[in-house]
Image (tube, rainbow, N blue to C red; front, top):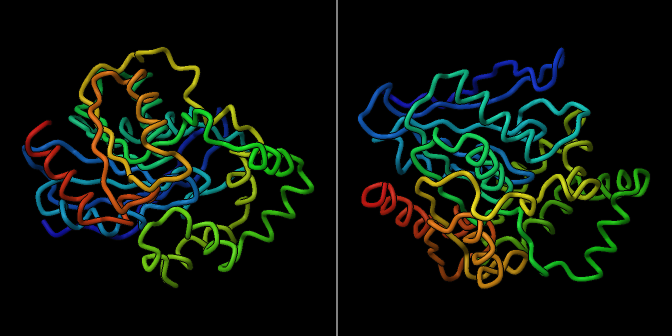
Length: 290
């Protein structure tokens, strides 16, 4: 079957009596003997951020990619955004489509959300592949950054900062540090990340990590967590925000079964920054370790 790359929307009841319109796409054959792959983007991202990865696997696997609530083309209601909410969305999505034998591939906040989901539903997933996941930060945030996030947490200042950021120049300045190969931060990518910022309600989702940082941490999970199936960490060596030598050991306390693979000349957006190396490692995991 030819892959279906058109947008599909459905209503998700994220709170009793409250629904949000959620976007996803489906790729690949209807049925295979291989597991289903579910790609989950990171903070500020959208399913298109996987466009250099999904085509490498869609002829062999049934694949789904979704926009988390508050991001991409999914609706952006005024609600309490948090990892638990995203984990609930993943759970509802898997149940809605009656997916079985699922492997979650999550980047950054999407990886943290996938881990949170796996902890809550430890027997559902075939595997968990985390690309530069967030949620554990060690001592990597310096005092100036903490002061900055404290300012953003103030509603008036935060909305002013959001207005200053929600344009191509602000987006470009935010994306550049997350790429080693900065030529990848081209006009197409910048516009792709800028468009959702213009949506109604975007300020609520995009400011949530700074206004409620504890809602985006995995620090409270038990070590080890409830999920004991196979797990893998793939990390960009040049990620200055989440340096692998500091953060990988923390994740391995939660997921002691997780091996780690570090890709050189790649930063935080590893799957796009160094897509060929990332795809090669992902293929190795899928073919030989899952």
